[in-house]
Length: 193
Image (cartoon, rainbow, N blue to C red):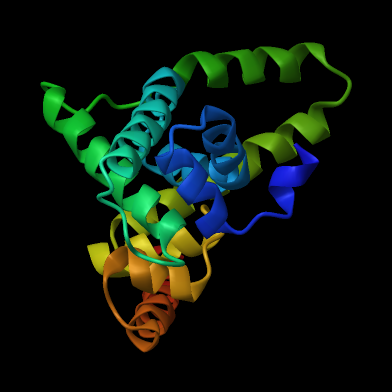
């Protein structure tokens, strides 16, 4: 596996196109965390997220073997675009959007508070969870272009160059969307206080 770390993306892609599966595995490992983070921030069902991840790389392999990929240095953005399209397909296939209800989780937390000496740490856990939930709700209220840039930057840990390529805009536009997204989040926080 050490030999793969020294190889460039183009070298790995060329070997994948030639049918070498071990090189595909190296590519998957190189970009697993970024692609999976993007999928997980959009799909809460972990089994569905795993399926989308696998299908993304199946499509990558199919395209590479058919010689349909020719963009240099934009591989991770291309994979994320594939994953994004699969996420859209996933939600279209659902009759309705499934809401996550964590009443069981909250019940378990309350039970732990009543029976635990570490009630303060559990209380902080609940406060932290509530803050994350509130921020998540505020992010969903942002315009889609700002929301996507925020999610790609903070959840998928993408660079602004990668975000620009994935969203098909200039780097300055991606930076501007990030700036306005943060400003809008601040406004939303002030309104909710």
